[in-house]
Length: 245
Ligand SMILES: [Zn+2]
Image (tube, rainbow, N blue to C red; front, top):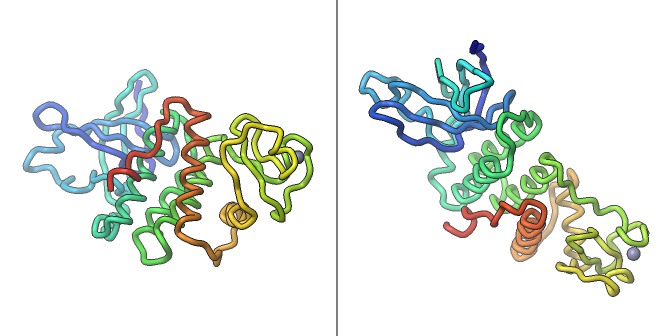
């Protein structure tokens, strides 16, 4: 038995299927990542047109069956098309990286409602003119890592448990986590945070918005977070979107 469900979703990718259909990957609000087919989507009389374009925020009605890998779309309506993302290479690059994270690093059929809301929000922010796309993306990446269960704790040194106040150079060990300036000397670490960079990282993790930073600080944090994810998720080989634009 299949049940008729209604949920909102972000379009992650689409491919043509058979002569007239399309198979679409969605990140849905209530059911997480799933694939669904829209039969007749490519027939001339189909009204879907560009509704299923990647990045779109849509409302879905579909027949869902637990035992099926690909669900059947009954109706799809556009909630929002983020038209300005496609007009700007920098925005496209970071929006693509958001889609890539959702596509590759979330578990099929597992709901992530907070991550869904945050993902719609970053697409909305990238679509508007508010803020540097790279900064918006780095904040999203930290949030994403937390929501998939790999939050980076930065309160204390993971060896001696001393509080890290942002007044010293610290290092990050992939096995242990953040280490204070004394403990780092006795461990194999992979990434050093200057006092300034560590304070910037603390700010990125907080709700503070008017942070001062250099572009290179953002590059360093992206590098650090990508390597951190690669260490924990072996199937992850880095974000292709960041290299291909
Ligand atoms: Zn320590």
